[in-house]
Image 1 (cartoon, rainbow, N blue to C red):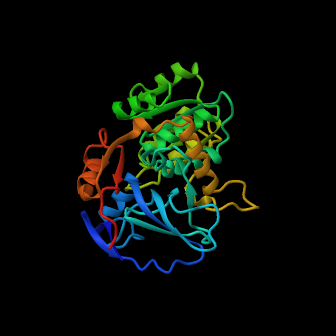
Image 2 (cartoon, rainbow, N blue to C red; image 1 turned 60 degrees about the vertical axis):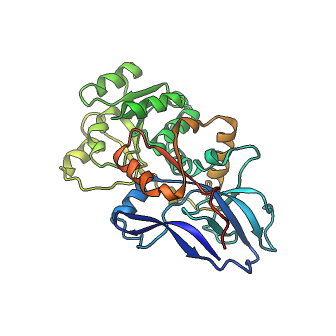
Image 3 (tube, helix red, strand yellow; image 1 turned 45 degrees about the horizontal axis):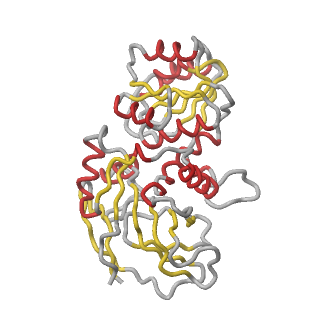
Amino acid sequence: MKYQSVLFTGANSIELGELEGDFFPLGAYDVLARTQVSLISAGTELACLSGVEAWFGFPGTPGYASVSEVVAVGAAVRGISEGDLVYGMGGHRQYQLYDTCNPRALCVKVPPGLDAAQAVFTRMICVSFTALRISSIELGDYVAVTGLGLVGNFAAQLAQLQGGNVIGLDLSARRAQLARDCGIRHALQLDPATVADDIAAITGAAEVTTLIEATGNPRALPGALPWVGRYGEVILLGTPRGAFQSDVTELLSQVHLDGNGSLSFKGAHEWRYPVQRDAFVKHSILRNAELALDYISSGALQVAPLHTHTLPPARAAEAYAGLRDQKDDYIGVVFDWRGLPPAH
């Protein structure tokens, strides 16, 4: 059958195209679902669109966050039925096929009553979760989060739930305000000339014990290291992109000896954990997704202030241009697939 998909057909070239899918007969463990909404992951998808991600080939369907309505299930599928809403790591396409016996597949039921356009933000919350899973944050610790896009905002919210006194920092006044709207009390527009004093005023002249770097811009890190106290930790949550030349000896001295020193660096890439539960690993992406959905549903995590745009897939070019060129306005951009005719 033929169905619609957002396609990157070349560097900076986008179209809504048609794909051919031979879904039937379903495998015993397959779940076929019709997409309701999908969420753009700006950092990864803009990098793919620009052609700098070697793993993404043109033409290709971008995206890895969707909420869909189940239309058919295989004979061996348990716990998921036709009509259920499910969250998964599906791309920007009209239909999703999940093989539930694949250890890297994710197909999680959305709690009753939770709006699909909120549930789809689970994907970015799961990215943020890793920073908290590997952290040493304890009740009352001061935690700085640099970068208050979706990933940084959710990391700040999760760190606060974990008991941290969170200081969110972003060059954008708009993103700092959105963080405050999401309940982050100390969310500041970062001014390099005053940021050290701003942090000291909040902490009572103490340093932070944890720094979560969520921008992915390698230039942001060296200037932030002096904020971290002795024996503190620096968590790299944002994926580093772009060239940056610096004196690595100076940076390593900051980590090892200068000032506070004795810092720990931790990589927080989401895929350090298995997708499915594993008896030998404490955490999993599945468990993070289940918790994220529960926290959104209960209001423990705030999503609504970050949901800035809902667009039909036909306006995909507009969506990506906004995320690239109007970063203060386009933050949480959702494609709504419900208005498209069924596959044929």
